[in-house]
Length: 267
Ligand code: DGL
Image 1 (cartoon, helix red, strand yellow):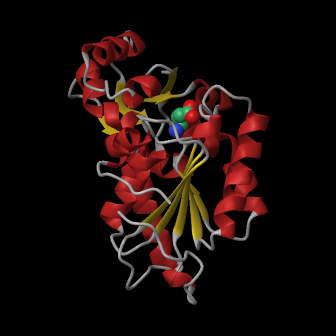
Image 2: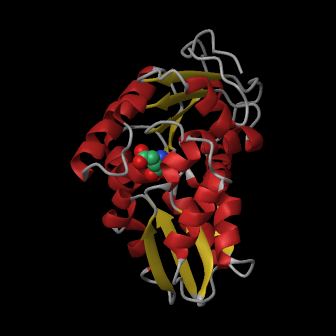
Image 3: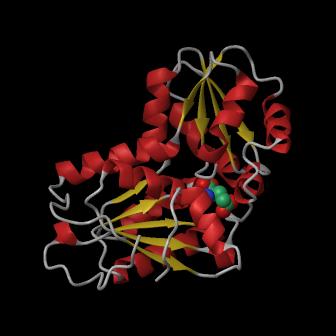
């Protein structure tokens, strides 16, 4: 993974990078999936580590941060933006789509579409407190004949960041959060971009009859569809990433490796 020499050098929008932002490193699970689906695309990743977590902040603050993040990515000459944070998507996707003249995709809509294909009786959404409070997922499922359970799982974020996704502590927390989940739930939506790291641990807590929806995979598929529909796919890119972080904690390299699944060179 190397830095782009110049994000603005491309003359055609097809060659321009895709902007991806998250409150920190959770969005790297989305970037990982994007790279698997779209190996020729270039990316500019913005991780707002200085202001993380978004999951416990007010709607107003998350909206302000999200607008600033897209303004930054827009200045880098991106051709579209992926909001790789469920909390930022929950509070601000409509505002961002109305405010910026760029295609902007969040992680919620594609995951809901995927969950609707799997759920027969009931769906559970695991997310940050902010996302659950926003009611966005619940509203999206309301017109469907499904039981909906939204469960805030705040401790999953630090467990994933500490590299403890498979530790007994994570299994204990998964059983704690999912204790009492009705047997009618047959689809479970990972409603936070940190949670794909805990997918196996969460699956072990609910059993094989519950199908998991990974927001990173469904978002990457939606981005690939949009690029095709809007004729924006890069025909000749080499999959480079330029990273920007608003803070650089000493363990940043380890965090990037854990979430991206490869090491990053930071611009
Ligand atoms: N990435 C955020 C999300 O998907 C979780 C981390 C945070 O609270 O900032 O909701």
